[in-house]
Image (cartoon, rainbow, N blue to C red):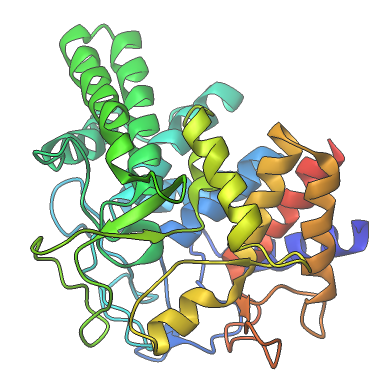
Amino acid sequence: MTESYKRTLYAVKSACLNGLIPADMTGQFVTNNMPQLYPRDAMKSARVFLNLGYKEEARSIIQYWCGKVPMKSKGEFYARYDARCAAVDAGSGARFDEPEWDANGYLTQLLYWYYNKYGEWLAPKEFVYELSDFIVSKIDESGLLYEGGIVEWTAYLPTTNMICSAGLTTAAKIAAENGESAKAQSYHAAAQKIADNLFQTYNLEKNTYSAVRFHGLKDDNKSLTEQSGAKLYLWDGTMQFGALWGYPIHPMLQSTIQFYEENIIKPEGGMQYFEALDNGGLSSYGGDLFFFSTAALSQYYSLYVSKEKALHHIKWMINNANIYGLMPERIYLNYSDCSDASPLTWCNAEFAAAIYTYLQ
């Protein structure tokens, strides 16, 4: 286990070039013949470096996303960039303009956690306010955010809403600590508004948080965003990330984890990603066994439930690593192969965090 921890962490560390984190390490997916940069993947890797005590790596990633990246609008990131930081579609066809608002919550948390750990702010407080003001402006009449976030497919996503609510709570602390009480109250109220309305994403029939969608498929890899017709409550295997990024543990989250155990965690230990209705590429993709969700679940178990359960998922990941002992994006549900993105940087970071958390 120690060897696997070192191997995966060294690989992620080697991929970190002055804050640039390529989505996959070996360049099997490229944009403009360059590695792809995803805010989500980079910021999640930064959390791992920060928690594991790798100050300089965490610092470089956080600073990169605080100043060197062109924004879609004030306080809003694009979903993906090429290595020169131009916003472009991914080589696999994934859109650059899918809303990526969960990144605002990640970055706010990272800035505050880094400050608490090392006593240094890596960005002006005004930048945090820009991230937070954007999120506040996008809370719609439902009291929630409607965006693409962690699964790159627009919906009312519970995980994004948890992460952004946690980020707004942190922004309120930052504003209060700087004597800006009006801002603090505004951010606190927005965080609470999201929390109060999160129940709308809970499927009472299945007792699980779900992505609330209006379309069960995409159109040429782009989300259909019109909110018309019946709501679709499609399961989404990412809720554990909400807890890892600072949203409080609560009964609906716990019952969601129970739903995972009964429905989307396979006996061997791998975990599926999300539900789709197209019965084609999207449903097949979401139904495969993903390493980042499995590793995050292992961390959740180590922290809040059972080390025994956490170890079960660690063993599955080790048993399904590639020939170099590194973690692919996913294993096909029928175990016939792994995805081309092998290894995927974010997966290796979360795997290292899973072992580290288990051993604490």
